[in-house]
Amino acid sequence: MKYLHNSEIGAHGQLRSSNCVVDSRFMLKIKGFGPKCFQELEHKNMNASLANPSST
Image (cartoon, rainbow, N blue to C red):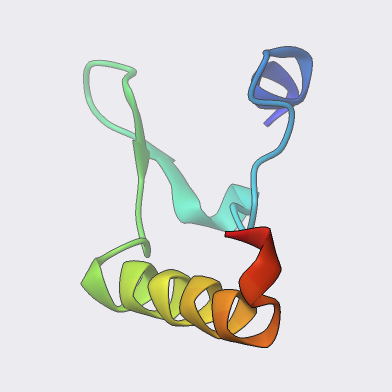
């Protein structure tokens, strides 16, 4: 997360350390961000667009 904060991305959204695991090759894996998470994000974005149509 520190890397993300210092990168041009600058934020990590709802990512928490409890969603991060390290595999046997010491590669970071992010869990808990499956299709449902992306559907909720899409739904939030759609609602924001409907609430403020001039911003699109």
